[in-house]
Image (cartoon, rainbow, N blue to C red; front, side, top):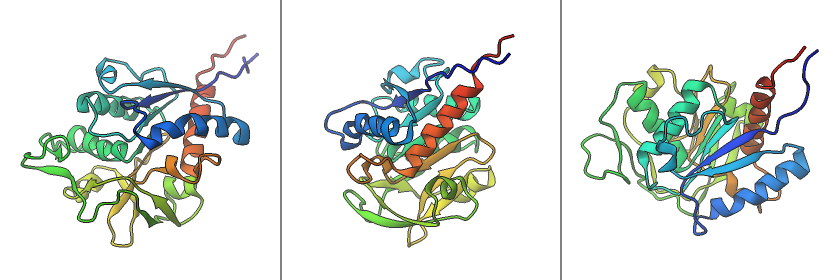
Length: 244
């Protein structure tokens, strides 16, 4: 007989928690709303970027969400958390700084671009993957077009969406190399700039430059956040042991 006892999904919230980061303050509201509105109950744990440097810091979780708040105290810790989620098939969401570092991790460890850097962390680097945006998106809303058949389209439920940003950095170079090595750049703004990335073949790997946690007043979780919660729930269900 199969043990059908539900296990509450455990989600690692990776970032340097601060009352000054609006998206961090939204997390308790979103968790409550997911439980009350969608019956998606998550057991969330904050893991600081420095703590994420430890081997296996996010292993055993059912989802990893790298939240905004860069520059992180430890770039290495954030990149290790992303790599663990990618390698181990743990559902992953990266928003704003999480999006930027997901691309950075992929470029370094999959594409072999070991010298690429993030301008916020290393402004004098010779090969910047993430650079200051020509026009800052801090406090802006803008339209995003989502590719048909993508994970992003499935999560959002539409081919076009208007999203909130609080960001001044984005990807610039090596986009063709990222694509050639399997990363799908599945959402773009009206100027064709990349705003969403995902990894086909992974159970759930999605990164957005916009901040879905800032959608509305926090009482209705953004579809991307609900999609992560569902993926975490599915991951937890798969890990429930069978018993005779």
